[in-house]
Length: 197
Image (tube, rainbow, N blue to C red; front, side, top):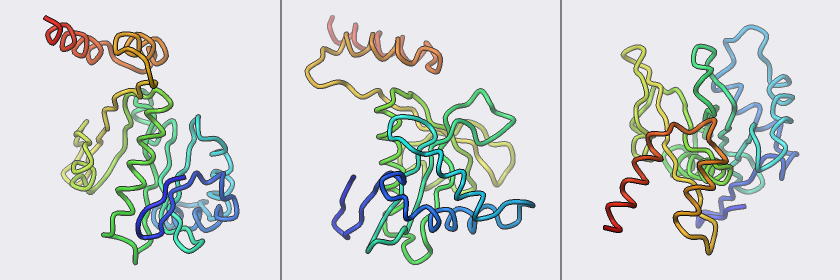
């Protein structure tokens, strides 16, 4: 649980199951109202899958005064045409009256911290507003049309306390070898060699 100066708390949804319906309503009302067959009830059911902090799916919620005011999710895939991109940041929503106050940034950073702890090296997403994410460190992956971008966050693995940099690199590479491309690991190794010389 993360607390911030404006009495805002960022929690995992499973820690506050009573907020599940309100979170489902935030997501549904922002993204799903025009989708045939979508409902708040179905979204509520989908959110029950986010039951742990160390696996996907994962749901982070911003809470103020006991109310859900924002949400972001980490899911395996959010685009059938890009099933090789995984995982995805999805369903970032901040209640209207809380927008522009840093809630979305806190949610994204919290979710990315979770992804790092899981050993993930990238998180993908789609957006029509790339500026917000660029300010948080995201890079463009692809722009399929003038008003929409696929983007990603490139993450550094969390280094266990008291471990040597070389051991951390080897352990992280083994743990995420199916998801991590070799090039960034080679680049880090080359940087490490050049600083030792």
